[in-house]
Image 1 (cartoon, rainbow, N blue to C red):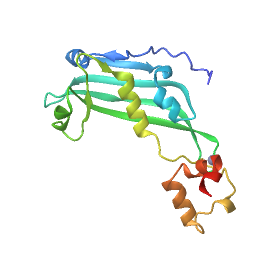
Image 2 (cartoon, rainbow, N blue to C red):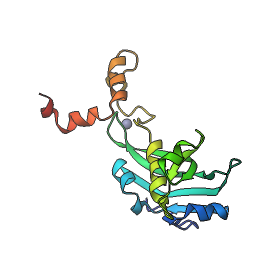
Image 3 (cartoon, rainbow, N blue to C red):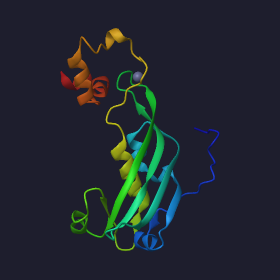
Image 4 (cartoon, rainbow, N blue to C red):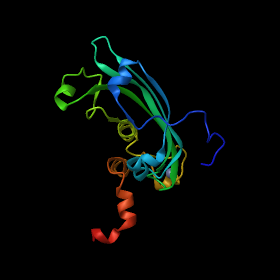
Length: 183
Ligand SMILES: [Zn+2]
């Protein structure tokens, strides 16, 4: 989208940080995550519209855990599993990280913190923020409006068909791509 709000005031947040230092400073980071750096997201969705925004606050919780609170959000286009056309979807993922240096430390964190493992002095923020977006993408997307005539997609009469679609979003694609595989 070469849209109106393309150039917002926000600059890119740093890709590599030392979370320990940011915690010491109670640092707040707010800005965009360049989509170019998010290969996995770009290959998962039809397209990413506009910027990915992140707001992160580093600090310690009452139990002295190093934590990061905040959110990351973006607008993407997903493939509607009914008509196979792109549809817009807004994704907002909450961030409740506990910064640790090993999986063992991560297991000791309280359940409401998601362990994020920093390697030495370096935490790749883009990577962990991308993880959060991917985890919060809907498994299956449908247009809200009736994009395919109702008689081809009845909820009441064909519960099985509908169920099947929900369980396996890629089935329709498979069928379109290579019905010959199945015979
Ligand atoms: Zn649709």
